[in-house]
Structures are given as structure tokens and as C-alpha cells.
Image (cartoon, rainbow, N blue to C red; front, side, top):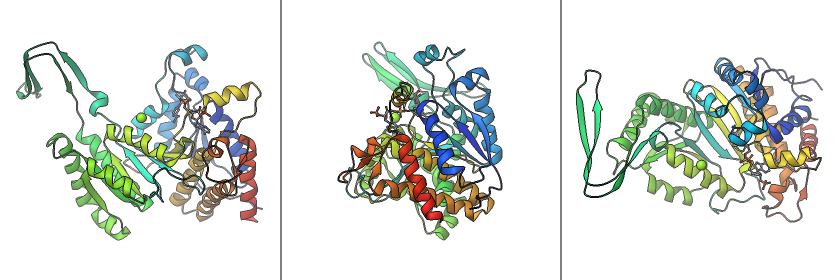
Length: 403
Ligand code: NAP
Ligand code: MG
């Protein structure tokens, strides 16, 4: 069989621990035998980041900007324990944070749905994709404890030194106060990413906030999204047969629980933080969540939502057999390959992405799965496969599909 050709490369970002082990297995068993893999390789493993003073992470992000598509393995975000474990020169920043900042992107997280792993919410039939605005609000707030009676104000001083003030509260006793901000520029980027991704995936887009109470802050989010939608996307949405709608956050929560799924829920920073964990858990497993970073100018970086699965890695190092779920990492690859195919007009590559995903889902639905899924499946007598066995079982299904 002739291997599928790739016209342009994708950016390949290798990572750490157990997911690094899976990364190689996926390439060796599921990709290289079938595709003439064309990647620009960046090793974002922690040793290499330390060695290059984290320059490699920045280079990788720039490469995604240049080539338009990337795929990333999970990476360690160093903390004090990791600084010691890896004898690091510095406590390097989160690679995902660095890449997101360079691409100015929004992260979309969606579950992979298979028969036998049922969502806790019975009505959910299709994935719910969460888009989290990842700048500002409570995550970049200033706070004060107010010790006793006194007046608290917001003061804005413009470039000419003119002040405007807004009273927060006349305290008659101790209390607390918080000042937070956001930027129109960042909200606009978020809006473009969300509208583009909705068009791209042909799904409705919901956005919700609390504009009835927050008449300037949240209302600005609502207004910016509406204005960009009306001016730049309404027609395209109508042509694609999808809708954008705004509602109050409490109404959205109620609708989501009663819905069938199959849409994108755009959230402000805090709502996205909370709701993405809720939705991921309710769909069954963190190991089945995909994640894609989309930049406002249309670059895509795919990855699994989970981390490097450190506990399994230590077992692997001790020579113990592991059963780590590679599904979200496989879907990161299929997502990137499909997008590359789409951008290059390479239908063979797009078809391969479909085959890879179907082979993965078929493997699980026929009863062979990793331990994390075996523990929650409604299927009787699932076969628990080791990390490598599971990937090899998928390979058999790809070979069947291609022959
Ligand atoms: P984690 O790697 O997501 O794993 C937490 C636990 O979830 C695992 O111990 C395992 O549970 C289960 N799990 C997650 N993915 C799984 C999979 N594919 N298959 C089977 N089980 C899976 O989170 P962590 O242990 O808190 O973090 C480890 C490292 O990952 C940290 O250094 C963190 O900085 C990094 N991280 C990276 C990313 C990223 O690059 N996107 C995201 C999050 C965390 P059991 O142990 O019960 O089997
Ligand atoms: Mg969270």
C-alpha cells in the first residue's frame, strides 16, 4: 500500500512522561505505517525546555503561526517539586500558557463520545464544546481587605492626568473589595475565535453572561460579540444554517442540562473554568476530552485535555504494565491531520483522519478499552487492554478499513 502524502508540514510538539511514551507508540503504530508523516518537530519535553531557556516553546508557537496547524503532547508545568526532580534552572512557565499568549488564542474543549460510556446527563447525545475566554476578570484582579469604616472608589486617570471616579461602597465596618479588568482587544479576539470555530465545526454558538446585573462589565462582552457577529459573521452563519445566541448565564445553565448537546458554549473566564470541569466530568472521563487552541487569524493547535499522567509513568518506569488511555492524544493527531488536509485540499489525508477516529471508537465499542474506561462502561465484560495493546488493536481496525 502506498502511504498517504502530506503537502505541507504540521508542527509536532513532543511532551513529557506517560504521554511522551504514548506519543511514540501512536506515531509508530497508527501514523507512520500509513502516512508519509511531514512534521516540523519541537521537543517540548521538560529537559529540552530547560536546556534552551524555554526558547523551544516560543519557537514552536511561532511555527504554528507560520504553518497554521500544530499537534501537542501533554507537558509538565513545573512546580517546586519538579524543579527539584529535574534540577531545573528556573520554574519555567506553563507551555500552554506561553503558546496561548503568542497565538492570542481561545481553547475549545470537547468530549469524544462512544457507546458504552454514557454521560451522567441522560439527554446529552452530542458533545458540548466549551470555549473559555482566558484573559483577565477575577484571574487578574486586585483585592483589598477593608479594615474598617471608610469610602472605597474606583479611580481611572487618563493619559492627560484627568480622573474619573466611581464609588464602590461607603464602608461602615470591615469588608473586602476587588478590582478587575478586561480589554476590548482580548474580547474581540475571543469573539473572532468563537465565530470562526462555530463556522468551522458547523455548530451553534451560545454565549452567556450576567449583563442584567453587570450593566457595564458583562454588557460590554455581550455588545462586542453581538457587534462582531452582526458586522462580520451573521451572513456566513445563516448560509451555514447555524445560529448565534446570547442568554443570561443562569438561563444557559438550565438549557445546557436539558439540551441534547451539539453546540459551542462560549464562557467568560471564570464560568469557563468551572463549567469545563463540570461538563468534562459529566461526560464521563478526562481521558476522553480533546482540546484545540484556535487563534483569531485561524491557526489551530490540537492536544489532549489531560496532563502527562505522572502516576502511570512512574509505574511504567518500575517496569509495571500500564493501561493508559491514548484516545484524546490520538484525536489530537486526527484533528491536526484533518485540518492540514482541509487547508491543503488533501482529501486523502482528511479521509485518513476519519478512519483513524473510527478505528479508535470501534475498538472501544467492540469491548476493548483501557482500564479507566472499563471502570465506568455500561458494557458487560469489557476487555482491559494495556497501553500498547490498545493502540495495536486500533491498528488492526485501520488496516481492515484500508484494505
Ligand atoms: P493528569 O496527567 O491529567 O492525570 C491525573 C489523573 O487522571 C491520572 O493519575 C489518572 O488517574 C487520570 N488520567 C488522566 N489522563 C489519563 C489517561 N489518558 N488515561 C488514564 N487515566 C488518565 O494530571 P496530573 O497528574 O495532575 O498532572 C501530571 C502533569 O501533567 C503535571 O506536571 C501537570 O503540570 C501536567 N498537565 C499538563 C497539561 C497539558 O499539557 N495540557 C494539562 C494538565 C496537567 P489514575 O491515577 O486514577 O489512574
Ligand atoms: Mg478548573
